[in-house]
Amino acid sequence: MARTLAEALAGAGFAVAAAAGPGAAAAHFAEADLVLADRDAVEGGADAVLAAEGCTLPIVALTGADDPRPPAGAGGQVMLLRKPLRLDALVDGVRGGLAAGAGALVIGRCRLFATSRTLVGAAGEAVRLTDKETQILARLAAAIGRVVPRETLLADVWGYGAAIATHTIETHVYRLRRKLAQAMAGGADLIRAEDGGYRLALA
Image (tube, rainbow, N blue to C red):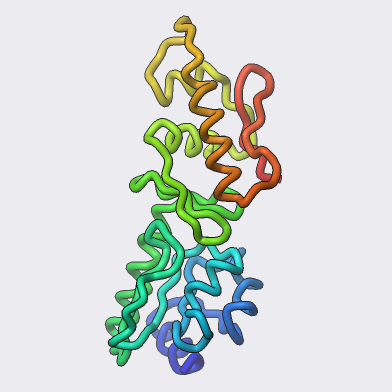
């Protein structure tokens, strides 16, 4: 089935790399935009195994018509397609998954869905952010590791002028750090305070 689906998707214009299973798929995460998997091919569900392997890409999971299990992962990461499947439904499903993924910002091993203010962690766990936390994280990620001055964050996120004194940003960054640590399952502090501003340290 994998070979048939790969040929069909390639014929529809997609670049496809086949993997022997969810564990082998991890080698393709860095260059892929989406993972297509047969949910029933792996005990526990391929979507759940992929999320546990650290997949933060959109996942299109093929599943039986009577499968009652909800999608694994969180934050809209997994789309279910019911079998038996027509080619046009498969292509539409893949395009829909790619469109959903295009709305996500990759931050290390996490994905930020700004619209739903959701951070999907390395293990597929969803961490809800406030609107301001989402804007801060997106602004820091857009700087690609450079320091974003405190005044710039205040202006971009709150619309404050540089002359306004407030500790609001420190409070929001503190809470955002805790949520990032939760999504990353611990690890180093990714938001660094330095040179009058903040930097997202992904390396």
